[in-house]
Length: 336
Image (cartoon, rainbow, N blue to C red; front, side, top):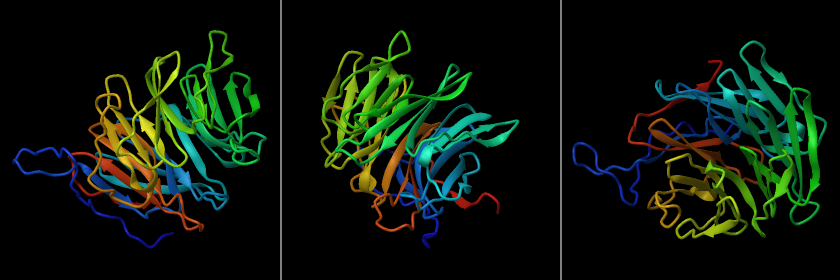
């Protein structure tokens, strides 16, 4: 575990800083926790109003796979180990009592209130980078990086019959799924009216994640050497300007009526209130850690990441926050 202790809120200046009730200028951008788990955090999912869940771990086979729990009302954060030797890459569910976390070598963990966490891993060496749960089905997507410039992808589906492989050897790693839409390296798909995969080519873009306000208002981000933001209008993908974002992006979040939030390498954090015409960012990065995911919850926006680019195996977690609540967060092992 990295020896760095939990950081108290490190307030920094930002562009267009809001003014509080006293008339003084303060920044909503902050790092609220750093170096508090034996793995980087890769995904965020709000299981309820009371609790936000994160998953991650040590990458490239270093393990472990970790789950972190953040309770905003208490301003507490704790972590626990779910897998000893495989990282968890994404989490999503139907409710606080029914969710899935997926990761390396076909790992699938399913939590229910009655059974706790059960192992539903499938027979593949692929890494699952994304998962999406709906009332009708659960989708796990991923594949292999390497073997070709774009890698290769796999898509699995769980229905009343259990888990089954839907597609493999796709011409690019599939990184994420959102509500029947899939993106990856040079590939994108959606489910058609018959429930079959339909190509919606994104061009030569590496897209790491996506989120939509509707099926004709979807945002995806990624990039190889620089930031890439794409918008799907239900017919085709269009590139969005990325002035000020610079480095490749890893996370995106939006919802009906909400701004578009993005995160990325070396502390990239930003949002746009005008569909990408302008991006609001901190005056300087708060951290050299990378933010792999971003999500709004209540009156704050959370950024999850860590030292994803390390060449060693000593991974740690970093959480950023955009909020006007500057209360410090206490972090610990969940068993303490």
